Length: 316
Length: 316
Image (tube, rainbow over all chains, first blue to last red):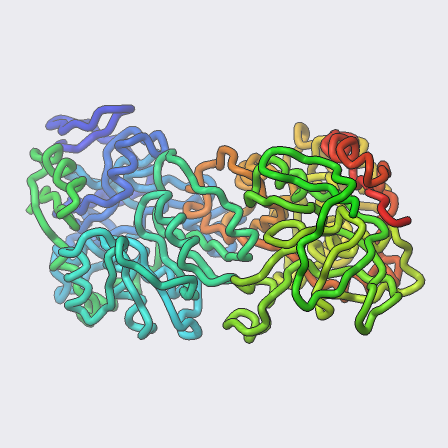
């Protein structure tokens, strides 16, 4: 089948890739998929991944209870038997594979194999373009599932990219004092159009007033910025991972008695529900589309500063 | 007066140091003081401090409501007017000085000047040797003041040094499943004698089972170790600061959705109460004593692996 494969250092389009079978998983014919910051980190060496990339997708289930229906898939494929799984933390199963990230061929291919319990049917009212955002939107909804935002007065989201935009839209639903700080005025304008306050990083002047900073920059410099604007005893949510880079000194965590909260995958049901209700604008984030055959160009585009979501069209 | 002064790169004993006056503070004649890991970090450049070092001490108040009494002093000297102070977080006042750490001459001198509201009288039943431990013991008691330990099954303290020992003794009061991991069998034996389970770092084999890891190593390698033994969604308390060194990649915080909690100064009253009740053994941690004139040797000693608390005798 056609697939986008990363091996050690090289990203390539392969017209005749032989997929690795995944026991007791459902084949999903991928309609389209989205390129995520994690994909860009993976091709820089993060996680040492080899195989088919891609974990944001919508497709059609080829068998099982969702046969013939449009589906999206949760990316953590758990053993369901270990201590983590028994306690309900399947996303943290130490034996898990992660679609397109860890020992599991991903969705930048004609088909991807996903355990049936990870699949969610997509209602008619959600378009394919919207459905591709279920995975990253769920990750944004993980923040209010971890923290009670209603008690916080000042929240700052760092980063005006794909994930920053989604996190900001989610947080804006429960916090009036939200500021998004970014480096790109065009991207910030998209958030202003939703009534969200924004500031260029070069002009930010909040002092140490933020109760909560959500770092979506995908760079260790985000943590440095967070240290400069967070209140003592405040909380910093880390949303993005990054390949090895210079990390700032962590002394402010101790001195200011900060709370750092890691936040990863989130509730698919909440994301699907909010897309059904048209509460979050996702489709305007799509800045370009490529066929799977042009995936190398698509990855090039996704790394450009003026791009937000780059879509790969596969079986559509 | 006699004082131990650090200027830029040089630590020196000065027989005729002229103290910097501190407005509306009480002069405390220092009886004895303790060398702390933070002092060792300060002489390696942490905080860019210049002046008299020392923040663990017992002395005699020369004026005010404690005149003539033995006292210890909280080290954060706050403005009492700012937003942090008004909300009760005087330890986080952005305008604060910190005794022997930030813009405030410390206690490795014949006298130290401390705001009266920072002073606590020491009861007769607490010896001078014990009283020197009030400040670091309060820092250990900050952990149960920040986190409910009663719900946690497995707690690991990393570090068998001064602070690790105190944190372990404090945590052992409310947690049966405590393990202290260190590099020094002699230091671990001291904890075993209190009925606390210990393991050499080279032999540790906990898997990812710890609900809480308290890092008292004073080194970024402690965080790497913590990442290897913490459960997904577990909490890591950072107790120690360090001068710039190589920090591990922080991706595990996001991937495992960890909670990192910075923890610094703690409740003096609780520490004094527990010393009054002889609940915590501190005096056996004293491994050597030096006169203030021999402070350079004392700092040398404090950096040796076989040492725990090094005491400086000043006016005693």
